[in-house]
Image (cartoon, rainbow, N blue to C red):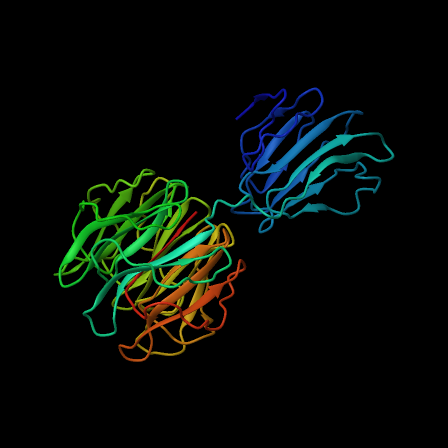
Length: 421
């Protein structure tokens, strides 16, 4: 965007900031690795893909102003470097570069005189991004080690990661890949699943964690699918098994919890996978049966991308959740080689990292959700053989998985996980 700003210049975080004296002209978003700045201009700098080196004007007059702001909240990963181009910066000569490397930062500089040169009059240091995450989580439905029985019970996760005892279920008891995700403003939805019959029904979850009665299904009935949020307030069910073969179809969820009809699938058809949000408004489906390590990104408009070559051990029956406000984690699962289990972190641009050996009991067929706005929890599932468990493992806001926490509630596997607020 461009134009003269008066009282409300744009800031990358979406917050309206106070205007610079006299106004500045806001320029289009800068994505290049270099920029020659002009006095009187303001620049949203998007460093998602690269560091940006900014060269200031070679000459300046007292009162000249320039603003730089972190468009994508990514300066902590790819910083900006300011070259003062022969003029002083805060009284120091141009013998070094000035760097700003805090996510969400905005810098407003003014030229004073030859002695002090350029001076930051606003250096907005805001490493903690405004979070869009949810405070609470929910585990719901599932099945025993050797079903039946199937369950419709739920367990609320507090904003400190404490799992509550069972809440009596509403809706058809089912397991085998019933899946859930957040949508709207602090709401969630759980859908599909199996109890000897495959379903496409859903159950809405209120912003107090109350699971609603069955809603008639839309789309192909299936099990062993996954779900995640996208676009900030919408969700998507994807992939799974329809009783005869794996599928790659998806069903979008509106910001009012309405599930759309089938969208033709993109990518390798598979089930027993996991998915989570990243980047604040995008999603990722990953891994799956029989032992894949590929992923498929979901855009902020709900478009599923083609297969991305996998990183990490191929496995199925794993879990995933978001953490840190804009990142994700795949964890646990079973692989052809067995082993202790692994985690793979997902960056805020959807890049999956290599394996990190897990802490805690190797586990599969569990699920995960966000809590506390920027942390996660993985819980329940299957340990050795068909045995089900209720143990949980907390995920910090830096993606570190904790040791086992003694389980609360009915031991079960193939359950759903989602967050709400």
